[in-house]
Length: 311
Length: 323
Image (cartoon, rainbow over all chains, first blue to last red):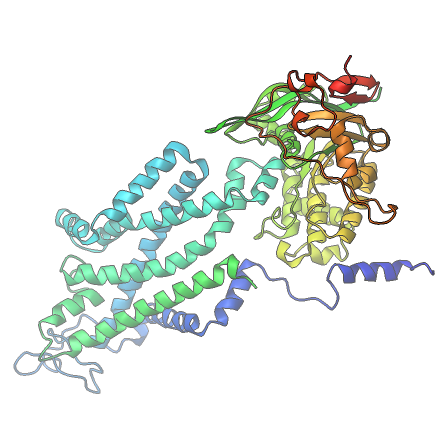
């Protein structure tokens, strides 16, 4: 038998360990998730909607045809003082005050998206913090935090908002406070469950065996491994917040005139539903599409980021 | 006598569960010299892994090390604070875990995971840590280390991941390396490679090694001394030749005769050890192995054997040898 020379041996081992052929680009968790998200047409539709809405909100001053708060007393209202229907000047018609409906919808996207992102960022920060200490340290803290989430999740949301907004003055800040008071619980629950399972993983034990300190284990080894479902929840949470804002504003407790918000627009439009139905229909459709977009994206992200489905 | 690196005396680790006290480790003694290798053999649940975790200080409630001494170069680890232990773990004692598929963090590149320990213990910056990581990857025989170092664990095979684990464990040049069944989860061909590697690096780094395994073949290949454990206690301790060729304890006999032999003629049946390992929460009175022992005497069921040194370096815990 001839002895294998050194280079052949190396090749043989390369082959045995599966690195024949060559160099695929290294893909991490995020690259992998993105690849899978791209293959999911429904989720991509959601992503496109979300992207368009975001663009619309950012570019509102540029793309809106009119000032959203300007009242066109002559052109914008009929001689009877009613809203005018769609025309080439007011593409989607005007509202009861002679303001351009399309412009108000575009500016309303700013309110909705800002609220959605701000509320969920606060929720995520609070929820992750409480969820991590609850899941990692357990015992008394865990019981306390989890019973608190039980209470929060069991409380009727609208009732809480009505009570809260009766005390505080209605407006953006009050909406944020109310939604954060309730919304953090979902995040805390999710994070706690994830931390509970990840902290028992062997790589956490291995890190501890290397002398890694507890804070570092939490930030370096546990948090990055629980972040994926949080992102999915974030997308779903934004749609929840947008819908919630519309609901609260519809009840007259949310965003106050003259600021354009989808919920307020639908509320004021409701009384015109027979004579000027577009006041309700167009903002309603926009709200529907936006919420749908975030939901689709959220579901897609949840699937794409789930390591169990990894192929 | 050579310099003793690690000395374990009468180590007892109990788990206080709702069903009662589980005596997982119940009086383990051994000494490890510089560069020496000790094999710890036994069935599942014989306390091998718990012994290792006790030494690492990684026993979590409801478990507790209730007594004993673990002396690393003379210092008792059981008396150290949590902070002091964090400095020792990874630096002076390192551990390789059983399953390389789950022992690496899936979201970190392997380079970062090797560098982590180095940065932590040697107080160097990230770049130097990364350089050490690269060097270590080359040492453990990973081809194209410059490319591999930026890869994620899921892009590697099991054998390679175990090499990475070894690289992590040895990156700070520990005095003691504990390998908890490092080859159990691997293919046979890869097993041999990993064992070769461990043996080689052990010489290179002069690391004392504790090899935990249920595979006597592994022990024969890598270890100089062997401790056979049963029900949380060492039942036989000697050098590897003695244990494999002149075993004294009935349990060791049982283990050896349950192994297939390559030179056996015809259809020789394997001889299993009858019965089940005892419930560690409810140990029998007397010798823990007595219920399964083919050589038991009346005394075995009444009194626990205290153990005897048959010769310097050969310890057996059995009534057959007690006068």
